[in-house]
Image (cartoon, rainbow, N blue to C red; front, side, top):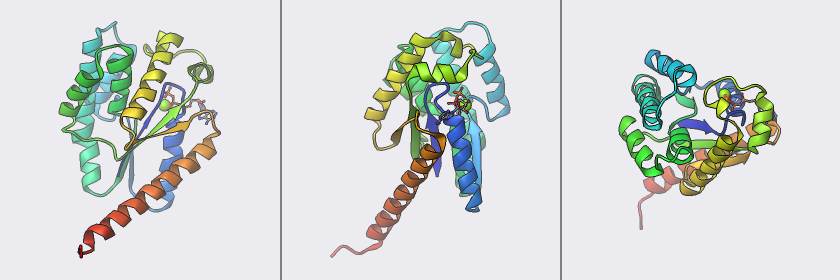
Length: 213
Ligand SMILES: Nc1ncnc2c1ncn2[C@@H]1O[C@H](COP(=O)(O)OP(=O)(O)OP(=O)(O)O)[C@@H](O)[C@H]1O
Ligand SMILES: [Mg+2]
């Protein structure tokens, strides 16, 4: 199963990823956790360029994120899924749709097309989106640490609006939560959603295995 976490900086993605990782490992599952951009040697170099490098045009930024993602999918995510591991990804293609496609105005469809090509169409089975007032997220983070964080409050508000749009557009896959809730409560909601999804898959498999009268 492939699961991604999304939300503005400071929304609690890494916190929830770690909590879910610990819960799944405690169940004895193989879990591969990775982050975007990064997770491969090329990806880590691209990460450094994107987060602390020179100013960059919006399409160059989108293409670099897509390049790092392509590498991560081929090198890490697909092999892990093929051997039956659960993959937890701290940001995935929805980040590009929200940041570059909508907040920077490159266009949702064009950025989606670029990224679907880069990853060979691989989408998460579930995407947990942590929605939070961008002001509160900013307060949690304190001093900005990278180039995108330094863009400030209006950009963060645009990204927040973009994520809400994505949740409506991809409602089958993206499950949105109130990121202002306590971390332990959110972790329980996420595990409950996954348990329900597993039940739904089992029901479907049974239904498909049943001969139709
Ligand atoms: N539900 C929560 N309630 C209160 N504080 C939280 C919650 N979740 C995370 N935090 C705190 O908020 C800060 C940001 O959390 P975290 O690093 O998980 O966010 P993030 O979305 O991964 O941020 P970034 O995009 O910068 O990596 C941390 O100090 C974390 O301890
Ligand atoms: Mg994080």
